[in-house]
Image (cartoon, rainbow, N blue to C red; front, side):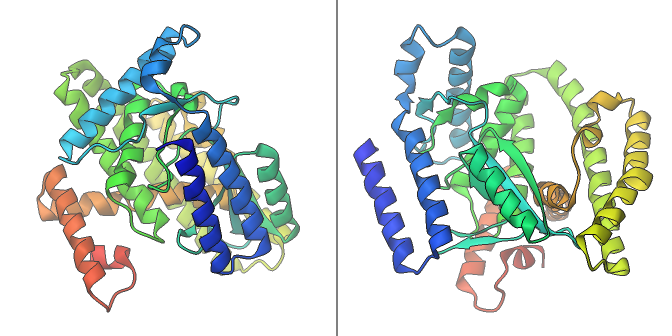
Length: 358
C-alpha cells in the first residue's frame, strides 16, 4: 500500500472516531499515535532494497532474511494466503518502538481498560514517545493509581495497517525472534475483539508450540534438548508468579486498604517476606542463578503484575483444553476457529473466553 493510501486510511479512521464522539483527550492521544504510526510506515523500505543497502549490517540483513523465512513457514503451516505484512523494514532511531503504560488501582491487581470506538478495549495505552508515556503515567498517579511503563520491541496493528519489520526486532536472538514473529503473525489469522487477554494468551500458546514445530522441521535436535528444559523451567517459574499474584490479590480483598499508603505497605511487605523468598527458592531448586531468575530482576507492583497476568493466566487452561480434546496443533486451531464462528452466530453468551471453555 502506498503512503498516500496509508494517509487516507488513517484520515478515514480519525474521521469515523470523531463521528462516534471520542473525547478531546482520547482524540489527542489517537492523533499523536496516528502520526507516530504514519512516521513508521512512511520510512519503511522494501526488504529487497534494504538487503542491497551497504549501510545495513550483515547481521541485520540476516535477521530480515530470517523473518521472511519465518513468515513463509507460518502461512504455509496454517495453509493461509500470505499477506503483505513484514514486506518492508523500518529502521528506528531508538531501541524500542513504543512504550506501554499499564494502570491499576492501588487496592487490587487489575489492568484498567482504555476503550475506543471501532477498535475495542485494551488494558494498556501505547506511546511512541517515552515522554508522553511518562506524562500519562504521572497523571494517573495523581489519581492514586499504580502504573508501570515497559518498552515494546514489536507489536501488531491488527490489520489496520500493513506492519513492517522494525529494527527493534533485531534485539532478539534467532529463537526469540522466531517465537516473536509467530506470535505477531498469529494475530493476523485470529483475533477476538475486546478480549486482549485471551488474544495474547492464544498467540503466546500457539507461537510457543509453533517454535517447536519449526525447529523440528529444520532438525535442530540439540536446540530442542536445551530449549525444552529451559521452557519447562520458565513455565514453573511463571506458574509460581501467577500463584503469588493471586495471593496478593486475596490479601487486598481481605485487608481492604483505603489509601494508597496502606496498599503500598501491603505490597512491600508481601514482596519482601513472601514473593522474593518463594521465587528465590524455586530458582535455586531449578539451578537457575539469581541474575537469570527473571522475577527477581523486575520491578513489581499491581500494574506490572496485571501486565504479566495478561500474557500468562490462561496458558494452563489452553493446554488442558487441547489435551482434553485430543487434537494436534492444527486441529486445535481449527476447533477454536469453528468455536468462534459458532459464538458469533449465537445470542446468549457475550464473552468468547467463557464460551470457549464451557
